Amino acid sequence: MEQKLNSIREETLDSIKSSSKLDELEEIRVRVLGRKGLLTQILRTLGELSPEQRTTVGKLSNEIKKTIEDALDFKINELETSSFGEIVLSEWIDVTLDPELSIRERKAGYIHPIAKTQYEIEKILTSMGFQILDGPEPETEYYNFEALNIPKFHPARDMQDTFWTEDNNLLRTHTSAIQIRGMEKMTPPFRIMAPGRVFRYEATDASHEHTFYQVEGMMVDKDISVAHLIYVMEEVLSGVFKRDVKVRLRPAYYPFVEPGFDLDFNCQICGGKGCRVCKHSGWIEFLGCGLVHPNVLRAGGIDPDIWSGFAFGMGLNRLIMMQAEINDIRHFMSGDIRFVQQF
Image 1 (cartoon, rainbow, N blue to C red):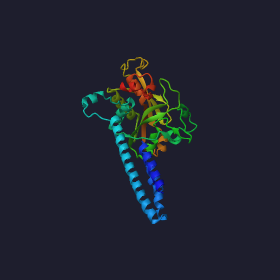
Image 2 (image 1 turned 120 degrees about the horizontal axis):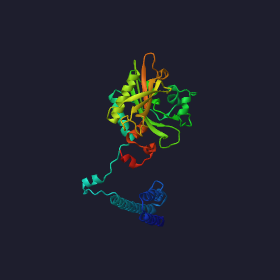
Image 3 (image 1 turned 135 degrees about the vertical axis):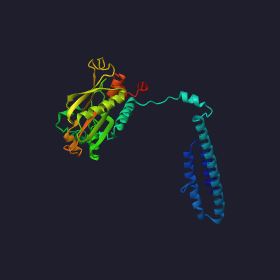
Image 4 (image 1 turned 90 degrees about the horizontal axis):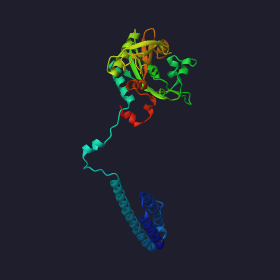
């Protein structure tokens, strides 16, 4: 028995000495001193020995246990000290550095042009009483199409190439879906805007992207007319371009508004005289808008015999492209820091 105890001590001390990780030391402790450890098992058999042997083996066992515990504590302290030293060397901070020098060398981040323009439009519209709403990017067919007066058989669905999911939902093709969700929760009169990311399943090129950003706006009240729509659009564009902007409406078809329009604004590059940017027409095509269709109001739980409204939707990417004369929409999603630095 004494020979076995001495053997356990020597093997354990050798293992402790050669260990280089704290996890290994814990494994040694459990293997030798744990509830089912080698030394613990021997101590449990002391009752089977004669009184003379019990005294000798018990004393030796306790001495060995103390020796192993001391060796473990020493090795653990050694490894922890060494580990702390490595951290100090690899993650040290020179507190004597000139803070001014440190600041000059630090590169600041940049607000993305889409976020910057979105914030500007939000500030303009909220100052006019509009409330900002949000909605899910994965959307149901009902909110994205049917509630917006676009049933399954409607040809307008072919105009919006859609990403469909395996559970028969989709990635929203426009932020108009947030209009319905807003109308379900709010009581007229109200003014809402909904900025967000939208998706179209189409090939990308200089003027088309599968992911882009829109801002949707809606006002519901009594006796809303096209004049209200024109006023709001002029205020938004004048706020964005920091100068007076004229707009015009051209008849257009959108299933969720009646009547529907395409809204143009006078070219800010040439002042309406005609240039390459506006294709020498003096006008820039901008967004779709109109008076909210009665079917859309009904889908939102609003009585169209009492309430009316207007709605518009603008593409942030294209607005910025016109502002900064950007010739490729793919720059916005490229992740190229040089593009963002220009703003």
